[in-house]
Amino acid sequence: MIDQSFENGLLTLTLNRPEKANSLTKVMLEQLDAAIADAGAARAMILTGVGKVFSAGADLEEAQAGLATDPVWERLSARLAALPCLTIAALNGTLAGGAMGMVLACDLRIAVPTAKLFYPVMKLGFLPQPSDPARMSALIGPARTKMILMAGQKVEAAEALSWGLIDRITPPEMLLETAQALAADSLAATPAHVAGIKHLVPGLAKG
Image (cartoon, rainbow, N blue to C red; front, top):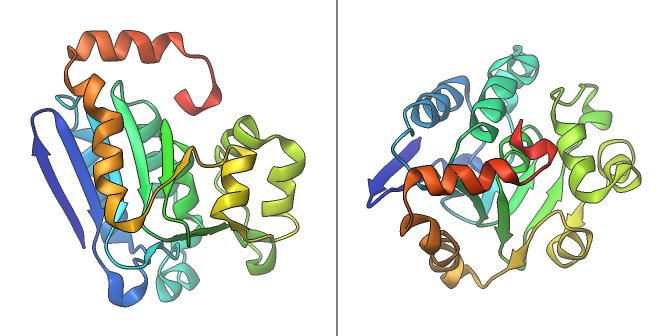
């Protein structure tokens, strides 16, 4: 479900349900929330997935039973945004639906070239989680946010990079290595120094 490792100040959380496109169940969301709540000793965190899809969003059956509007999504993204360490979403593939919230709450986003990003709340009849439009708009502006949320556009990695929705494109075999390289300076610093610099950077992504 959720694999986690902690080594030398680096917390790595991995969505591991590739047979279901890493669609998120309530149990998985609670596991992520608990792991992030316990991440106080981390100086950097990487969030990634197994397989060719980062996450298809909420598990369809659980979404229809109420998970799509469960407060766990907002709690998770708020907790992630509030982490004092450097947080990196390493997208091993397509990102869809409610999984967008946790990725928007990270400090940095990198992706493989084949990744697509979309959030089909208009088509599915749900509202996005409350903080997601503000965080997305802070990155790419209100018009492009409406392109995704209201016009239902699937944004390919190259366009997402040009918009600022992701920060770097990297080959699949280099994804984790790239994320770890981005985390290296934070891992070499003290937690207080990492937190101090992060606190100085303005933006809605801080929560």
